[in-house]
Length: 270
Image (cartoon, rainbow, N blue to C red):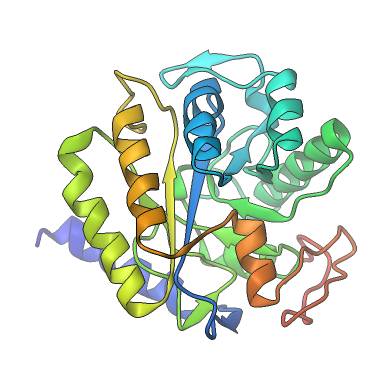
């Protein structure tokens, strides 16, 4: 192990151990969730169509400031994409507004952008979303401590399975990148999730035949969904998985039903 990777592992251990908001998975597993970050159009046109073909749905972590733009992930979402995915039962979740890293700005600036992103989703859809994913997977202790008080959940890119205790302030998630050469690793994760009766979250970005380094091919995505369905686990959005556990979304005043009753307004200063 290199010094850099060792320091990264140590940092993840610290972030995973402090400012936790634990809930029990109980007997709800195994669960598998498929999520998309940033919301490239192909995440819905290709990825969403694959999920719908199996009768299941996904979670789209959306940075509204990327709407109608294009980057290495391809064209980003348009307003009609949001209307369509909500109509078909997918989940629209928050990913800040400008897709800013919590490590590149102050905690106050980051919280402001999280608030702005959540407000933009509410304005577009009339529905509040307080399930959140950190852009770039960048997490700081200050952001985890502050945001966790008002979000229903915050998803990381720290790999692993969620359960038997789940940290709502730092849900673990696993990349779904590349092509069918990655299928064996994906199948092994699904097998372990079934065996442990835990909650496995996948994340990716674009879904196209020649994906970016942060996306996957339709063939890999379909194989992952198919394997998950055959495993016998529940295939649920993040929102529906949390509801199954007993966690219901907070509103912007921090009001919530379920196990997580200690939440306050989003971005309350420490």
